[in-house]
Amino acid sequence: MVSGLSRNGAVGEARALFLAMPARNSVSWNAMVSGFAFAGDMGMAEECFRDAPDKEDAVLWTAMVSGYMDAGDVDKATELFQEMPVRNLVSWNAMVAGYVKNSRADDALRVFKTIVRDVDVRPNESTLSSVLLGCSNLSALGFGRQIHQWCIKLPLSRRITVGTSLVSMYCKCGDLDGACKLFSEMRTRDAVAWNAMISGYAQHGHGQEAINLFEKMKAQRVKPNWITFVAVLTACIHTGFCDFGIQCFETMQEMYGVEPRADHYSCMVDLLCRAGLLERAVCLIRSMPFEPHPSAYGTLLAACRVYKNLGFAEFAAGKLIQQNPHSAGTYVQLANIYAVANQWADVSRVRRWMKDNAVVKTPGYSWVEIKDESLKVQMLMRHSEKLAIAFGLISTAPGLTLRIFKNLRVCGDCHNAAKLISKIEDREIILRDTTRFHHFKGGHCSCGDY
Image 1: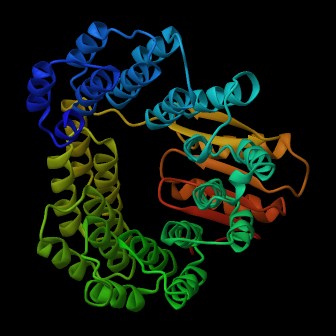
Image 2 (image 1 turned 45 degrees about the horizontal axis):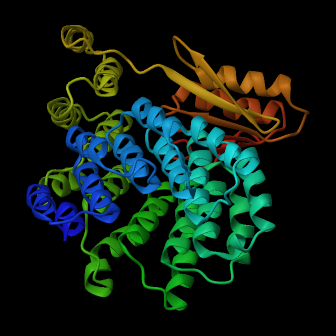
């Protein structure tokens, strides 16, 4: 009862019931501490934790570690973990998952290495799912491959959760061939596994393959869910299949019972914008049954630069600034659109807004993988991907594929440079930015230069 009430938002009632109990054991104390932690009240969780009679209960300590990780207090969670008198696999998993959740994937990988090397516990599906997500976030393909080889030696490799996590890792780290091979070898596949592979094809610009896999998924009587349709619509976006995307969006609720969410609407706005149908995109935004996601306005703003539509650009930028007045990307894009239109007074006005609102541009980072190690390159000005490509060229053997990862969207200048370098050096360059993968080969890019 205490646990159920806490997890349904009635933490006050749970505490009253806990205090009214004639006798309390470790289970009830764990439930109360976990309840406060789940509700985000770490002050009360800490108080209850200190009052608990059993100071060596790993479940109690783990609840506190997870609570602080969920609250974003990584240092406090780490401090408690180091003080734990007894640790079990769940405790170690809480640290790995917590580090990944708080954008400290390098620490998650370090903890995983400790588990495998020094700790008398064997990682389970939860451990592997978390650490593979960490590999994806860091684009640490080499380490991900090592985990895959380690999994093959264990029965875990046949678990659908682990297989799906590996497929997703390969896709997000730029090794689409590795993902395809592993997916084809999976004995059983659920909707999550199909979604991972369809999403991988979509993000790499292989729209037709994504749609073919979607049709195969339906033929094998696996029911698509809302994530499936996000992946399919993304595939349509990156390959220009506008009509098929519209058809999917209009029929997914009637045929599959999937009600359109903000993600689907944002995909449709992107699809319409890439097709040059800006008026239809704006009509769709205005007809949404809920507040549009910022990505919908961001997509419209980016399209306005391509199609030189100042009116819609000001509409989209106004909404974005209203939602987040400190997002530098909005101001920069709007200023660039004014610059293309030779409206320099408006460019100056936008720059004054940035100064008045103390808006600072996000610094650009790029990663390049050299001998299974991901090396980060930061340029304080811009174009860090150029530096990463140059470093990769002088640090790897001729002909090897370069894998570059960028924390911002790649700019047109770096995009053109990557195309040219891929032709001159006769190398494939795979560049992942915040929106998709770009495969540069022979002077061409898989994105079609959009």
